[in-house]
Amino acid sequence: MLELQNLSRHFGGVKAVDTLDLTVRQGEILGLIGPNGSGKSTTVNLITGVYRPTAGTVRFMGRDITAMEPHQRSEIGIARTFQNIRLFGHLTVWQNVWAARVVRERGWAGFRQRWLSGAGAAREEAESLLEFGDLAHKRDMLAGNLAFGEQRRLELLRAAASGAPLLLLDEPAAGMNAEEIQDLDQRIRSLRDQGRTILLIEHHMELVMEVCDRVAVLNFGRKIAEGTPGEVQADAQVRAAYLGTESLTA
Ligand SMILES: Nc1ncnc2c1ncn2[C@@H]1O[C@H](COP(=O)(O)OP(=O)(O)OP(=O)(O)O)[C@@H](O)[C@H]1O
Ligand SMILES: [Mg+2]
Image (tube, protein in one colour):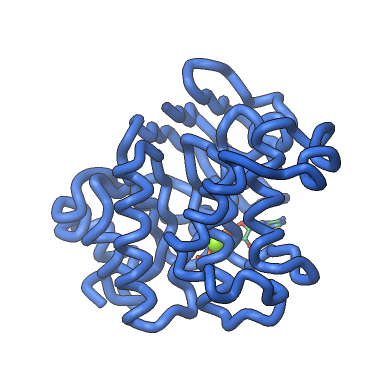
């Protein structure tokens, strides 16, 4: 579904992403892990078009999208959540989900008209997403006033509401407690079961190892391992990369 070929992005002397080859297969949950600063978020920014690569290509559903603008990429089916939450803080929970759902149908051009007239299937779908995210009871709250874990949940709902077949989740569990992470685990699985393909960036190893079909590991911008969660966990290079930073079995 998504293919990164020989992808690099350098910032001055920093090789944030370095000759990365990575394939995300349709219907899988692929984990992308690595120590702080290893290039995970830069990879997401290259996939979504926020950054242009220094070299290499990004292909999505058989099409070279390396030169495409970010909004075009979202229109053809790539959605993301941000490591640092970015919601419309002054809109309600409902409006945040509704906005994402409406843009999907008409693009930004038809947004105003649809926003005002909204009814029918789109509304039902947004409602059921709020239920799915356990935020229906907070639908009229301003997103900016939600608790942190709820904001992360809302970000996930917004990405899902876009209808994109590919979801890039950049540390969706950051700052969540154990119970919230369990719920997130279930939600990620059920999004996959509904046909979404997911690239999951996470530091919570328990979540990664439980939920991912495959895992790729970055270190200093390079992919140092790829395989099943078990294979990656047992890999000597991966263990060395994590030494002194965080535990792989945490
Ligand atoms: N816009 C930028 N300008 C300069 N350097 C950058 C920029 N974005 C990222 N970097 C550098 O690129 C490297 C990779 O950063 P990136 O944010 O991709 O890491 P990460 O794996 O997401 O880390 P974390 O786990 O802390 O989120 C780091 O050394 C970072 O300082
Ligand atoms: Mg990051």
